[in-house]
Amino acid sequence: MVQRRAWAPVLLAAVAGLTTVTTSSWLFGSATTFAFPASLAVKESVLVDGLKFAATNARSDGSAVTMYASGHNIPEKVVLKEPKGMKVALLKKMPTTHLTIEEMMQRITTVLIRNIGLRVSRQPLSTVKLMKMIGLRGSQLKHGGRMNYDEMKPALAMLQSQKVICKIKSWPEHTWEIHEAFREFGVPPVSMDDREPWKMCSILKFERVKPPKYGPISGVYREPKYPDIAKR
Image (cartoon, rainbow, N blue to C red; front, top):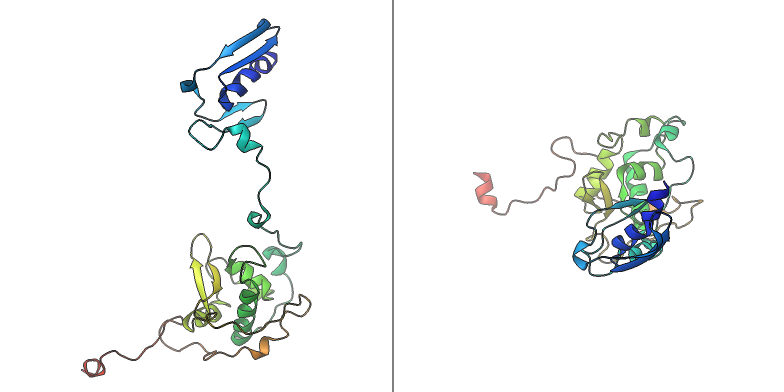
């Protein structure tokens, strides 16, 4: 351990890209100066006394010491933590809710409007977060996993077909945002009060709130471009 500490200034200088370093210890006797040519820069991570310093000479914007001391991340990049008690394992043990498809659609739209500009979570909301934020509890949340959200799938699919919401990505989690066509001329007002988030849900109306009997729920049915050919 003593020998490794004696070599620590030399290794730190190599990682930092310094050309010379002076050290003194019982291992080297008196003060000793080491020289490092620029071509011998460390290219791999080095572990010195439990601290991991990344390789630097491949970067032109500064050394590892400079990057290590650059400070904390900006607040916009820090992911907000969920409130205590919002785990799925706990919420699925609560009394079961009985939200209809129309109520789910209204609440999903309200939550996503509130998250415009990433003001709520600083990232697009995933399906699991949406299920918790709109108030699904008990069996309605229990049967809706990351890929098999049976209770909420019709509501999401019909909002997709009406271009109210859009899927940002599908792996590793499905994340959602308000569709650009829906927000082109402004969005309807929603309640920004956390104590009464669903106060203005009743003003949200949709063209369809019942899933179709046949075909994909998220599909868009349009008139044929050439009706004569379609009749044949």
